[in-house]
Image (cartoon, rainbow, N blue to C red; front, side):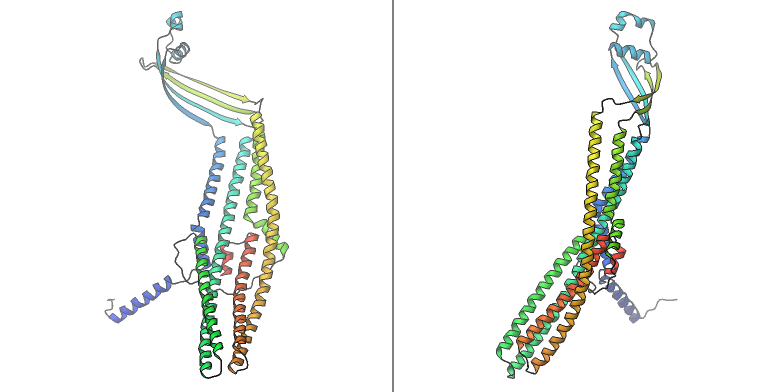
Length: 452
């Protein structure tokens, strides 16, 4: 098939492609996108991952104690020390009858030596100290991973809070802009009524003051939006992120569970509590390893050495091997080590007890906040509807000359406050649910999508 040469067809194609690209560029940032970027960009995540790597390296290091130690040494030496000279000649297999002369023994000639040596050792039994150290290191590794998960949930909560704050600020701007337009329309209407003799000059001045107040509220709302967006940038770890309009905030209806069920979920799912529990077990293993230091140690060793004269070229080799049993009969330092590990365990146990009590209080507070927020949202919605109806009636009465502008402005203030209270209740209800998910340890990126 030959390509089309119709210029209008190509213009239409380019226009459609440009529209698609422009639509993709202006797509609003979703909550899930913000969370994913935060988990990839926030520097706290990098700190948590570094801690995981360090714990993993410690676990690997603990296992190296099970391996034999093997060393190679290349040594060049020369001297006339009687003991050195005597031993070197023996190792080089160059000892003769003449070397037994007293003068040769007391005042030997300088002798050089090239020594190549392999030496090794292996701990066959250390009263289970190594096994307990490995267990401790593995548990600390798991604790570090759980701590990283706790950091992830904290980042998710910060992003949710900042994101919802932006949505609330956007809605406040919409309300403030609508109120300003309404105030300007009222000012124009009042001016016409003054000209027609249906209202006095003070009515027009009151309407002007109302317009100025609405402008101030719009400016304040715009400032709150900028601050909320700055908080979202920080939570995401994206200080260069450009401002863009997000999907408007909407009310949500969340399921409520019994407090005891939420407490049970938190006890099983809270990553910080899990991390501390694993740290308790790890420290208990560390105390056991410190106690094992008092037990006997059985180790094997071996050496092979080749010695050669730098001048004659002759030489010899030798080896030695053995098994060694060691018992520390004055373990002062080991007692101090055990005392330190035991104190560390007592500290972690106390921290775990404190965290469990704090967790119960935190979940209880979040549970009450969610219940209160839902009731507040229902009340705010009813109040907003009543205020809107009251304002509609007073507008009709004012236009009919049956109410003063003061009555109308007062009804407008009530309607505006009811709208602000309603959207604040919507924001508070969503945030209270996120707080409960965070308190119970279930605030995952997937769970946060329901807050959009």
